[in-house]
Image 1 (cartoon, rainbow, N blue to C red):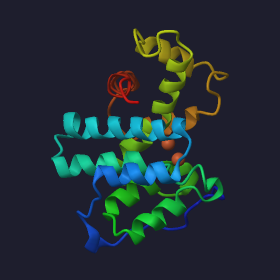
Image 2: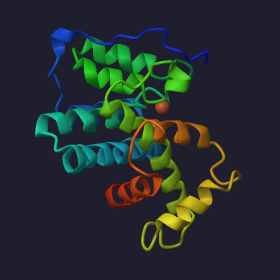
Image 3: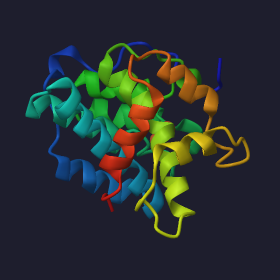
Image 4: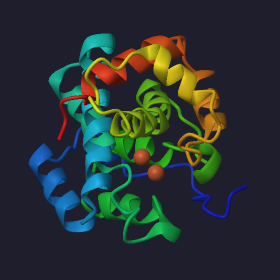
Length: 200
Ligand SMILES: [Fe+2]
Ligand SMILES: [Fe+2]
């Protein structure tokens, strides 16, 4: 087990179910905790993809879509200032703020092989699927002169099979994440491209 294992399986307080913060408050927290613009963009992209998936593919209510969005926005909030305690610090902060326990669990399970927390529901499984792939697709956009313009799934698939490209992105994590859902990789890639290309 990773040294970053959280060694916990329950998060937040069930009495806080449905307790969400306005999206503006999450953005304020990000601005405060994450000076690195590139990292903030990563979280905004994951949030946009999560929210879109909740609405378009899960038929989620506005309240439920906000949960997905907040999990995406906050999942790496402590990464820049607390790399050795990544996840633990933001989880404890959100517990202090009485955040909905499902949002906290989703953040805690965004990398199960690292934090030792298994995804339980669809929201948990999708943040795991989107996290690495979103970053990978953005890295691919940055080396293209036209960025997202004209980007296609085939090009991304090819880069995924090139171990030296964005080598820090774990292909094992991507495969493990995909093995837990029914949607094929090609469809996920297209969904991410469509929903994160205009986020800035
Ligand atoms: Fe992370
Ligand atoms: Fe992330």
